[in-house]
Amino acid sequence: MERVWGAPDLLRLAGVLALSLLFLCVWVPARAAPLRVGLDSNYPPFSRVDRRGHASGFDLEVAEELCQAMGRQCEFVFLPLDGLLESMRNGGLDLLMGVSETDERREFMDFSKPYFRARSGYIGRPGDVGTGKDGVVRIGARGGSVQVSHLRNRRAERAEVVQAEFGRLLDMLCAGELDLVLANDLAGYSFLLSERGRDFEVLGDPLPLDSFPSLVSIGVRKGEEDLREEVNRAIRTIRFSGAFGRINRNYFPYTLY
Image (tube, rainbow, N blue to C red; front, side, top):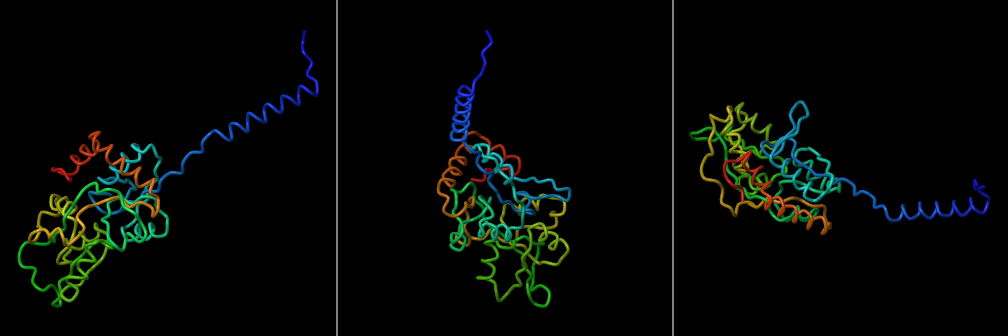
């Protein structure tokens, strides 16, 4: 016999459906917002974006592995270093790859455990650099970097410091517009192995470790302690899984840490 639904039945059914929808609204978790991860747009071999918009580099691959280890979606933001630092200061980024910890930077971001170390040295043409044009040595350094701070503190009276993106600095060095570039030794090593780097060398010994912060970390949004610990766990995970070593070998012939 076919059942005829009356008004009381329809009211009870409506109540059950309403409770079910309420249950779903309460218990279905919202997806976490993607993490905004900053990378330098012109810092080979760590990260760069070519003219076709293709992104590549050591730090990008490490960031992708970290996001996977954390189970988080990530959006990658490519800017020059000084723009990345400003965005971090203004709350526009959650993470910033490849930065050294300094007193100034601690004011607006926290830092993960280091994931590699690097020294700094001067790159130039072999031979006596002399006094440069107009009696002043023109030295390039990546805008916003710890190398700029070093040059201003140590060589302010003897050199003209030129700030630019790293790729632009190399263009200026090759064109004779700079006498020297002070750079992370890993980035410099990659340039020296390239075709256009064959006429250049590291001049002198790398600068002493106490000249710069030698440990390189990931900047984390200020006050986000849970996120910082999450990043630290992910760094340990990709080291023990072998993922970091695989990426390391793709870019450098020796272990970075």
